[in-house]
Structures are given as C-alpha cells and as structure tokens.
Length: 302
Image 1 (cartoon, helix red, strand yellow):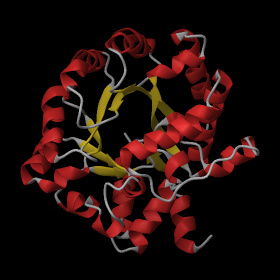
Image 2 (cartoon, one colour; image 1 turned 90 degrees about the vertical axis):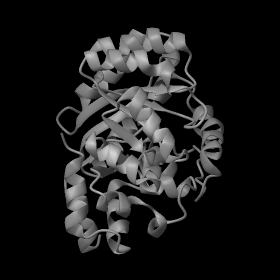
Image 3 (cartoon, one colour; image 1 turned 60 degrees about the vertical axis):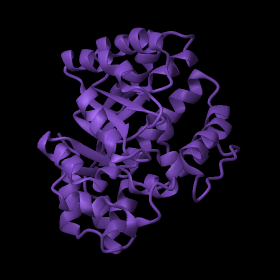
Image 4 (cartoon, rainbow, N blue to C red; image 1 turned 120 degrees about the vertical axis):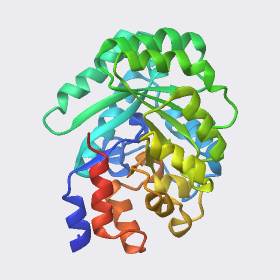
C-alpha cells in the first residue's frame, strides 16, 4: 500500500450515501460465497441497466432472510475494512418480506447488527423507501420503522423523473416530528428544476446526488441558503453514465460554489470503489488537494 493510500485509509471516514444490502465489498462477498458467480460490468447502461443487473444478480441470489442478513452484515464489515467509523445507510422497507412478512422480525435483525458492531462503527440505519413502493407500504410499514427507534433518518430513491413527490409528503412530515433526518435522491439523471421541486415539497435536510444543481446558479444558491448537504458518489455517477469521467464531474464546481458536500460509496457491491479509492482518485487526478479532501471527509460526521 503506497503512502497516500495508507494515509487516507487510516483516516476515520463517514459514509452517508449507502444502500446496506448493496454495500458488500466483492472480496468479502466471494469469501462468504465462493461459488457465487458475480461479474461486474465496468459501466452500466444507465439507471435502467443497473436495475436490470440487480434483478438478475442480486435479487436472484437474495432468496431468504439469511441472505439478506449476510448482505447487510458484509456491507457493515466492508465499511469497517475501509476505516469507515460513521455509517448512515438505507435499509429498504420492502426487505421485511424475507422475514415471514414480519416488520418486527426484520427490525430486530437490523437492531442486532447495530449491537453486533457497536464497538467498531457508529451504525445509523435509515428508512429506505423506493418510489415504487405502494402507499399502503409507505403509510403502514414505513411508519412502523419510524416509530421503532431503530432508524435515525429517512431516504427516498428510485426513478427521479416520473414520480409525484407529494405522495411522500406525509411520511416526511411524520419523520420530522420524530426527529429523523430526511434525504431524497434527486438530480443525478433529472435536471436542476426537479431538485428545486424536491426541496420545495419535501424540505429535505440532505440530497443524495444532486449533481445537476451545477446547471443553475439559482438552484445552487437555494441549496446553500437552506443549508442542504449534497451526498455525492462520483464512481456511481460515472458507472451509470450520469457523467463521463472524473474530470467532467461537476463536484469541483459544486464545491467552489460553497455547497457542503460529502463523498460516498452508494453501492459498493455494484461500483466497487471504496471511499478511500475515490478520495485517492480525486487527489491524483487533480480535482482536489489532500487538504480539501480532508475538509470534505469531516463533512460526513455529525
């Protein structure tokens, strides 16, 4: 391990844009399941291509509560291996179906993981809602998660262009009454106007991605004035084709505009780039200095 990589690896890090059952590192996954055939493409065919890959590979493998627990456990262990000491990670509300359709049983499994690794990582699971979830699931199951005390934040993800966010307003308001932090995926494949709309409707504390804010001075000012943080995942953006490469990524312009941002893994299982990997890439390609990366690193911590 060279000097820069060792230096960055040894720094405590926070990962605040992470999907738990998709966050296992390939090395640990193959150690656990040596017969599992899992070949990652270098690039996915956009968001739809990623979803197809998940359906054909991850979902085909994830057939029981044991598999779900394994993937979540491996995700936490992968974070620890990269010296991530603070982890905010989405736990999809629909995963309870693998636990005899018992919300309580699933929440207990998540809580057990918190207890298992409490001395190694500050693990803050968040209620993860796919925009395709039914209103019944959102209003009943989602509310149970919020009331449980196990989860510390709320995240909304999925197709950024074809959903009316007003349908999620009630659960966002409820989450705020329970002092949960709120996040929303927007502005990776959708334009800056969708970011503005999401802010107006949901009033999130943080935005997952949000990189198309760079196209509008007004949007960037809206983000800074409201103190919203962007949790950006450069390698995810590149692999999905939202940007061409590191040098064309708008992260530097967003940073220079005064927006508070973080750098995260998104789905380590799919994009195969740790936070250490991404910090090093951004430094070596001249996007940020080590001092600037260190400032961004500290942004992830409460």
